[in-house]
Length: 484
Image 1 (cartoon, rainbow, N blue to C red):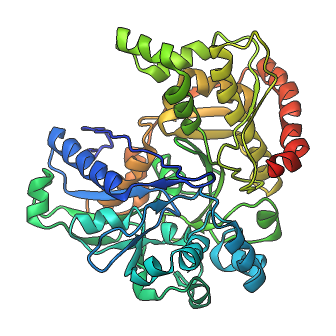
Image 2 (image 1 turned 90 degrees about the horizontal axis):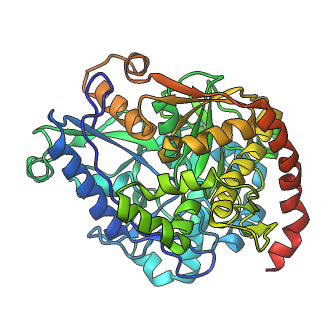
Image 3 (image 1 turned 135 degrees about the vertical axis):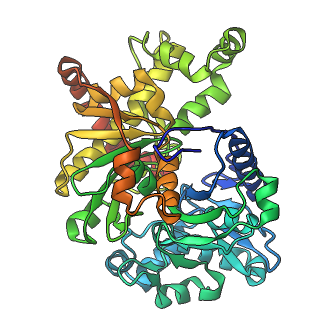
């Protein structure tokens, strides 16, 4: 919760499980996530010293859930990193064409997008598909639970792979290929539009001010960009959370060969009239969480004994590492630039001397190496970056931030809040209820650069040698990884 100066008034937090029922599948339990969202809203509102007058939601993309006519989930939410729909994507390539798909939707054709998952459901769970009244994402499901219409903003709509980014409407040819009708999809609206007033009974239950409104937010990465003040070309944000994503902004839609060649998307920004592009890795903080949950018994015991955060302990431990292995973080396939859903994570360079500290540092370096590949692709597409603004939970890690600055050879700026997506939603909500006339006014008030990590160029030179090894690992192992 934020006040009208962009200061944090209160916060709340819940975790929910990532479900992997089969190899290559990635799901969420919609009841578990929906309950967590409500719990967070209620707790944060209760702790806030000021009444909550507007809410907007920053949500992960491509995460769609089928619901029946009563609003009951018929299956789990399927996530972007889920690769079950590879065959359906290949059929779309034949039926519609990759270039036409990119020019229409702004996205390279890939199994991550919802259209492929819809076809998978239709082919593999036909009875469930016939019973589905709505296909909704995690902007719309909380809205429905809050008692307001289930509407989606343009940025999240684009991630379904059914949305025409220039016409700002659902594409009839793509809906036909998916086997869905427009009435099964949410109404698409601009970010910042008032979705509806939350009923008084819900406001009372969740400690919200009477008359509190829900405002259309957006996809988590463009929201992180707005929260970092990326409201004009030439600026970029590095969002380091469950995934890592570098987001850049454009003042017009760009769907040329350079973008497609680098598998870079072009999607509506949450800033009206602008577009955004994403370079990303499917795992970042989730890889540290994987290590924590499976191998960090000593670190968790120390956290219980001392009261320190387990991730801070892991961060300090990584700084003691002398010989980290090379970790290629393709644990759910790759993000950009390869978009290879068949790749796998690898750990190479292990010795009997490899320690827990080395493994943690290998994770931190591997995620940063992967994003250096993406920075090179952005530069080739005409977007060179010397400075990035950083948001997300990973931006709180001093060790990881300095490591990235050294490895990339770039200046990384920290902001007054690491939760850029939430800050963006506060700005969208504040403008919607008249606290500011324009988003730019809100950005000027809310977004403040508070610090910076300057690269150590001697370390950058050392990392550049290691990077040349890293750069060769995936291309050399690609065929073997596919056979695995």
